[in-house]
Amino acid sequence: MTGESGGLLGRLRIEGPGMPEALARIAETILADPETTAHLSIVDLAERSGTSTATVTRFSRTLGFRGYANLRVAVATETGRAEQARWDTDISGDIAPGDALTDVLGVVTAADTRAIQDTAAGIDVAAVERVAGAIAAAGRVEIFGLGSSGTSAREMAFRLERIRVPVWHRTDSHTALTNAALLGPGDVAIGLSHSGRTREVIETLAEAADHGALTVAVTSFSRSPLAEVADVVFSTVVQETTFRLAALSSVHSQLLILDLIYVAVAQRTYERTAEALELTVRAVEAHRLPEKSPTRRRPRRQNPS
Image (tube, rainbow, N blue to C red; front, side, top):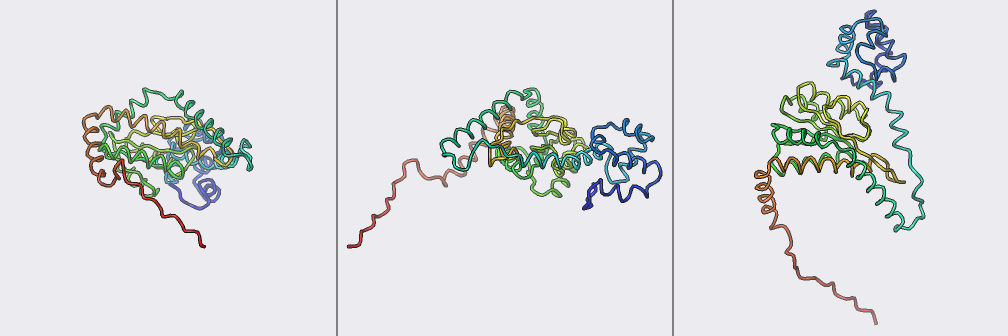
């Protein structure tokens, strides 16, 4: 993928005029209306630029992409940045700085409860079963998310690892990409991004898809670039409150979906899971205090006479 500081569109402005005529026309078409291009099929772009689908594919590979799908994801990611920035800074006014914490508790509880309920209502159970079955039989599972989505990814990896699923959570984008390249048919890649426009997550999932792995997206935007590169998409619902942006609030909805998948995997690997949980509980048992531990009282201070 292109890694120039100016991004893909900046690169096209610089390199486009010097490309062969047919490729230059494709660059001009993209730059003329990148927002629309992000939603065009390869046939549509070929027609608009007066070229062929083969030329569009060659254009994509010239820029370092595996194919047009990856190029379109890159265009969509860049054109979506302004929209994402507006979304991430749109703080509602439902909590005032001077509100009592009891009122704040009510607002936060109501928002989180509503988000979880709405997310649950939209879950495709058949899709959960498909993903759980794939994870249970997978030789390798890769999970990737950044920021608050990384918290959900890390928790899911911990749960699956504890029941002997060969799973890895990558915090570095280069490591994620190189390991996604090692996936193949029978493996699973899960990408989490509230906006669905996080470049590193999109690229990782696209890389995994190119090698035949089952790709799963968890995002609040079902028509986002991340969703486009995924075989299975789970949509999260968020309810913003003041001081808690949507990306932070989405963690609750993400964990609901991931927890459901985890339980479904555990059901399919019941004997193995039961044994693993028993062993892990026993391993840390000595590090837990007994249920009835003596209370250590702090000595009272003597008032100076």
